[in-house]
Length: 502
Image (tube, rainbow, N blue to C red; front, side, top):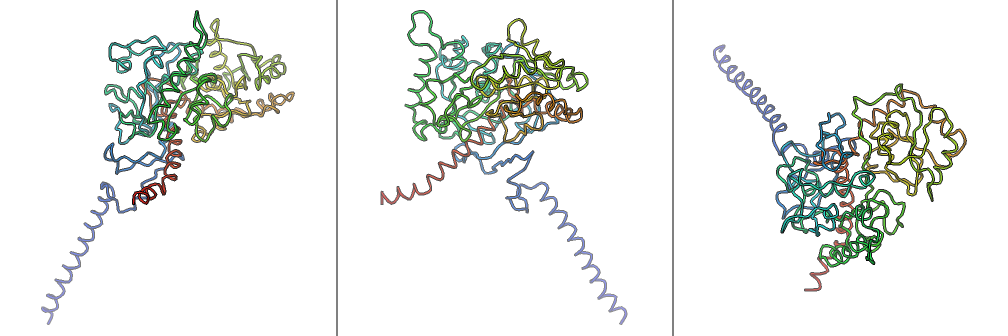
């Protein structure tokens, strides 16, 4: 009897052990599948959105080819603030050097970007050189439409001085051209495509700010300025393009950073998306936040390395301002503040210009100051804000109508002080406010400035998280709104066509 019982127990134990071992291997294999398989057991909607610094990224795994790509709707990840900078090569002028930055935007080193994974697919018109690099004196060889951007020695230089502050047109165009150049390492943000039907946005490579700065005056026997002629020709060209006619120009990107650029053409091309410094000289029906993008000036002072930035106790000047004091319109407040502050012992408030080493002196002054005033001038914005950021001098913004670049992803109150104009002109108000900011609070803002400064750097090649990539990200937000409007209008269009033909 005992022998029979032992025989029945042995198979039971063996079966139990077998079940335990099988369960172990089942759990182990499931874990490996979760870690390494492209087809996770977790619902795909969980992985579609990855939140990085409150910015959404959706990489569509089904984008296999140019022909089947859907429009891109989501934004790029905000840059990682903890990466170390690398040295950047000089291309535009002696004042245009800046540090390469690393971040979560872009691709691995050695890659120029995959169109299927790009933030934006951009179709760029092959306008004649007189609209862009020809304004810099560049002349290509026979049948050469664009400079060889793979060779830094062949890239025309942008004029220095104050011209540089509106040079974003130059940097964006170079970035698009470099997306087709294998030996240029850059983030895979905006990629140029040759078929406009595959593009998210249509890019118009007209250096309108440079055209205004250099060619808006009539010379010799001219009856019409070169700047006026180029604008008239651009309007005629665009209005004749199928790409413009499809959406009435809504998917076109036009650069008009200088407030006086595109004065003739802006109303005729008002449906397009403009890249602007501010809305100071635009009626709302031509330019507004709903469709247009505010982009930063290029600072003209040299960026201070984080390791060289003076802390609170080594900045003897409390408040710094140097620039034009007597301005019209909203800039009249500069004169009022001048008379309130000019005699204060720890305040530097004087007239200044770029002449006689003005930029060098301004850089020294800002780097030695705790707070730098950014006061409205003829327009709500000025390059002074970005010079202050590059100098790690906490900006004090006194401009009620200012619009700021990238404010959907950057919280300016973390590194800027905002003061209403009506409060700033009250006797004693501004100095009491700034003197009341203690060292620990100022230091927090100073540390944040050192983190965000990379977002305002224009450079070539572009780097993850720099001004060029931040602009492409901002454009992508607007593109999604354009596509949203188009898709809503097309809800019944197809069925209506079928009904008519049937």
